[in-house]
View 1 (cartoon, rainbow, N blue to C red):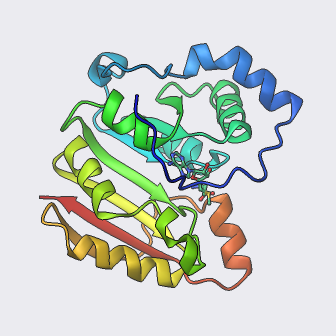
View 2 (cartoon, rainbow, N blue to C red):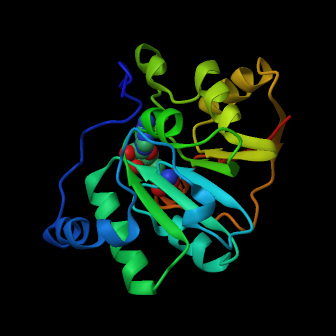
Length: 219
Ligand SMILES: C[S@@+](CC[C@H](N)C(=O)[O-])C[C@H]1O[C@@H](n2cnc3c(N)ncnc32)[C@H](O)[C@@H]1O
């Protein structure tokens, strides 16, 4: 599997607690999907789901768990590569008896092309991606024309891409990238009730950052 040459994530702050490490060891088999160079049959994994939604970069997974509990009719494929957060979300799933989340530990640039069938997702969530505020780091931002094309190919026509950021310059940059895409239409929306406040968002609000929600539909 070809790996991206530019990382969209930071490897700082990856200290994992003993509980998170134990959760990864014991629960990944139950609530995780192993990374393989093979497309998943998401319908077989979630046979009764109304919608199958991928969350990219769930962090510590608190919002993911709340959404899955509040929308039991939907299924969530949660992708991140931060080991402490993987352990934390696996524990939350186990403790709350959640059955509609599966966790994949890898870079989404690998997961989407190698493991997800085209036109198989009803929605994609990307909440508070690393903003990379310095100009020299903008190339690390996850929203690029190539990434939009990749996400569009995995969404069903009419499927949605919901994003949020508390970094206004990044919100504007995201809108610019979307405006060049022929595969999405949409823009800024009010925060929807069904998106819980994430941990990262809480930290931004404490610093008076303004949150922008964006919603685009796959044409
Ligand atoms: C700033 S945090 C936000 C976490 C969470 N969504 C929140 O709002 O609290 C960004 C997350 O995206 C993850 N991430 C960044 N690039 C990624 C990639 N290419 N594939 C999967 N996860 C990624 C990071 O590991 C991190 O957990």
